[in-house]
Amino acid sequence: MACCDAKYAYDCCRPVTAIREERDKHWSPYLDTPPFPAYPSGHSTLSAAAACVLVYLFPEGGLEFARMSMEAANSRLFGGIHTRADNEVGAQIGQLVALRASTRDPADAARGRGPAR
Image 1 (cartoon, rainbow, N blue to C red):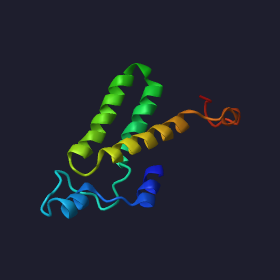
Image 2: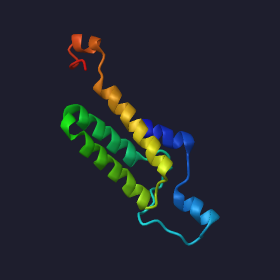
Image 3: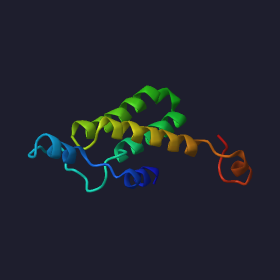
Image 4: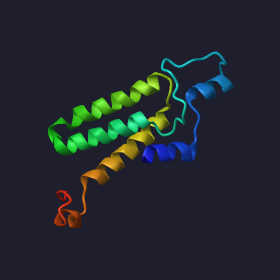
């Protein structure tokens, strides 16, 4: 939800739009361009959030989870449908959401709503 809210708040165009207007009107990305704003990257948001939660649950896999998250984000960059900024901000949002999800209020644990972290 945080990513989608930001997408429509900033309403940034995809690389294909900017490239066609400024450089090459026939340019096309390798991937199909989604019909919604680019910034921030939803792929980066979700993969970073998943990686952070997995690191929380399985600390020994931290470097591998981070690598896989970066690979997921870069696939969209190299596919031509996101910019590096889209990916970086998406990853930051995902990390913040995961941090919030993995740190519960101790009062919730006392009320039986899961463990405090």
